[in-house]
Length: 289
Image (cartoon, rainbow, N blue to C red; front, side):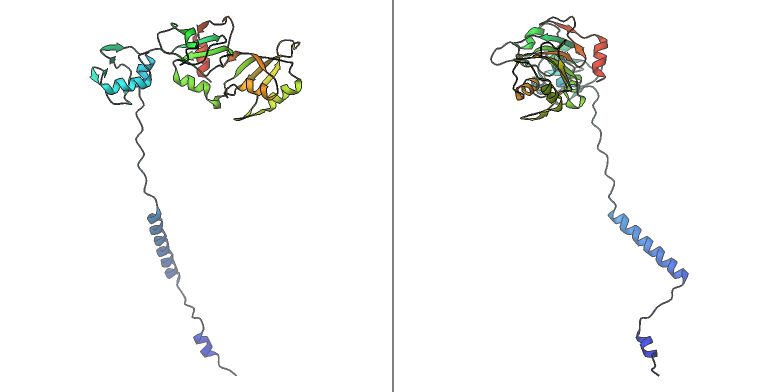
């Protein structure tokens, strides 16, 4: 009979560990893991200081008061002719707080009030502040309406008539023109030939244009629908010349285009070429958009 005792001696040796020894090893491993975690843990980064946005930027204050444009205001500030509370200010980005007195060239500048003006634009006027070619602009139609510098919100083509809002409230203008707010606009369209029902459906489904697809929210024949050349179109797209291009893509020529509704505002009691100021209720509605 063979003696296997030598094989057992040469074989793998198993060591017995007491419960106390196992507990000690576990504690050492946990301690080592904590060291590794601390080593790889990112140091907390200091939070950046919040920019103090109290008040309004000085260049905007001057521009809104009708003194000059923002770019021109920066030049005035840099030249040292602008003072706040009697002290010259030359640092661009300076903000004007409530109660501070601003002077430019020795003249005290009064802070302006926000103005909101609605124009029923006629054809043949360009939606721009100035035109190098000397053509008629929408600013000619509202000249002298108020001492504040107001600007058109969005634009209407030269051959498009209808509602155009003016304001010096930059925040509201930005809100009304931003695509995410989907501000509703309604147009009265007249085409060179009757529009088929199938094409009305296609306008809602969407038309592929050179800068992407565009679609109407609602379309329909105007009035009792006897004249199928007259179409009402509701949409919120802000693409350039979007109505004309959508109809052109379906082989129609738009011979008349009039914006009848803008952000809930209508042309009621507002003749072509005339303007009016919004009332408090209308202003409040726009600010809720």
